[in-house]
Every structure is written in C-alpha cells, then in structure tokens.
Image 1 (tube, rainbow, N blue to C red):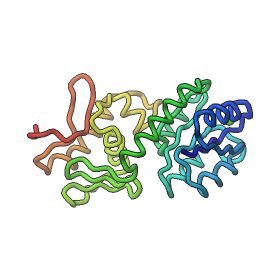
Image 2: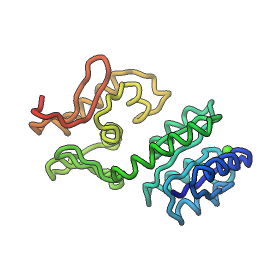
Image 3: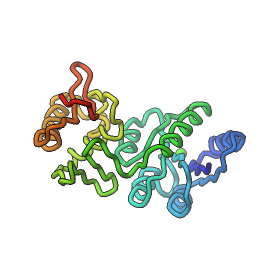
Image 4: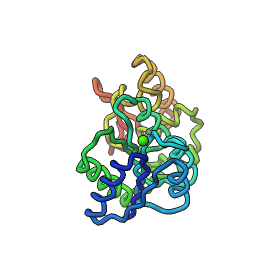
Length: 226
Ligand code: CA
C-alpha cells in the first residue's frame, strides 16, 4: 500500500510519515504544490493525502488536474475555517476530507475505508440496474440510451450514484452539487431533482430515484419497482 502525502507543514508531514510507516504503509512526502503535482501525476499511489493550502500550486488545482487523468483516491486536508474548500474539493473529485487538526487514528480509519472501497468498485464507471454512468466522460445512459443531462443534472446524478443506497438530505445535496453558501432554498434542490427525474426515470418503467419523505433522496434499484 503506497501513500503520497502532500503537506508543507514539516511537523504534520513527519507525524503522518512516521505513523503510516509504523502501520506498514510505504510513504512519499511532497512538501510543496509543484512536487505534489509532479508525484501525483507521475507515480501510482493507492491513496493521496492532499493539503489544500500549499506553496506553489494549491491542492485543489492539483486535484482537478489529477482527475483528468486518474482516479487515485484523495483525502483532502482542510483548515477549520475554510468550509468552501471542502465543498470545492468534493466537487473537484476528492473522495474524503479531514479538517485540521485531526487525529492520526481518524486519518487511518479514512485511509482504510477508501482502500477497501477502491478494491470493491471501480471509481470511473457506476452501474445501477440499466443505468450506466461514466464519471470521466460525464455521460450517463439508461438501457444503452444516452441521457441528455445538463452539467448540474449530471453532478446531481453522480452525487447520488456515488452514494447509491444512501439517503441524501437536501442540505447534503446542496453542498455537494452547488455550494455550502448557497442560500439553502430547498426548492432549488427539489426543482433539480424533478428535472433529473424527468430524464432519468419518467421515460422508463423501473424508477431509480426515490423520495424519502422528510429525509431526502436515494438512488437505488428496488425489486418489483414502485
Ligand atoms: Ca498547508
């Protein structure tokens, strides 16, 4: 298991380095954005731990560039007062984030969850019943028929599909698809869900996007339909 840590604070970097080596991981450290970008793109890691505030190139830019070529799982490190960074990071394709300061134990748990997830499911292609989603190409099909989705509709579908079977509240959807400062007008989410449903479900017998009253929405295949 090989991990890249992109972190400019020497103390944090060496603390993570030591802890992860003790756990049996192979660890590379990049202390600035340029090295981090180079190593992330050039070499193959099982997970990248990526600080956002970096000298040279910031973590979000590295993540966006990385996502155009590969789906290495990424855990972002963000400052407590930079909530926007978390949302931007998730939108840019981060798999998880940790708010500084965090415990080593917490990081380890996230790493283990991500590498487990990585083994079980390919990240670029998702499939739910006859729905196929290509996260790279940002395209979706049902029964082999291409769905004509706007960028927002695709982002909404991808957010639900990445967590298929989980109920996502309107607030969580708003954070994932729009941003956290968006004036939490639940109508915007409802309208977007309705539009997505019009293309995703209305033309098909088997419905995939379900409303859970008072809780939110879930994308899943239900036997027997509903
Ligand atoms: Ca930093």
